[in-house]
Image (tube, rainbow, N blue to C red; front, side, top):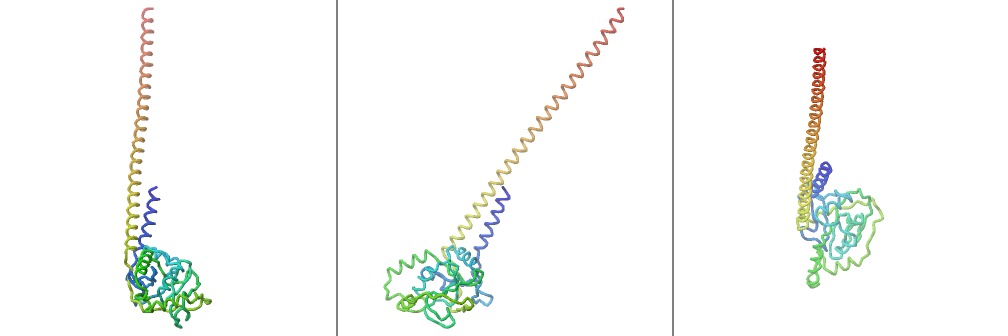
Length: 276
């Protein structure tokens, strides 16, 4: 039981350590607390502080969860595209597809296509990841209902008319997995620090504390059980010693009684011999 709990502690520790991400090596695009419709792209930074593809499909999902958010779905990235999100780097989404949202067609980005350009590639391929913050998406939706359409511009610097034109173009699918995604250096590195990450940290602390208390309770119960077993063992040993002592005493009394009978018999015979 103790070993089981110890294993659980190690498991939780590994999970928690995965959540402690070095934000200095991560770029969040568009930037801190600047997601578009709740969607933001996360890239890894190399030693030159430049983005590099580093996450396979599984790593990408875990990375978003470590921020306290979920990996974005295709529909969510599509919605962000209609609101002006545009990148030049492929990122994983929930459907195990790599996508790049494009408002304008550029030869070295998204195969010179517009819309949500998809790339069906092996899940071990290392790319970026699109994450989705539901709370930010809800807040932005509320703000959008109160702002006038003329005051709103998309993130890529285009007006709402540009975004509508981009959203009206059909979604294009990549037919060649050999195309190499290009790199966009337009955004500055921005560590993602927000309420969701704090919530993830709080959950990690809660899990650790709960498991620690559980481990302490197991140790205390094991100690009590061990003491009880020792006490029972001592009682049994004392009872056995008592029984053995009683048996020895009984044997000694029996031997003494036999010797007394033999002595009296000898005296009787001696008296009879003297009388005759």
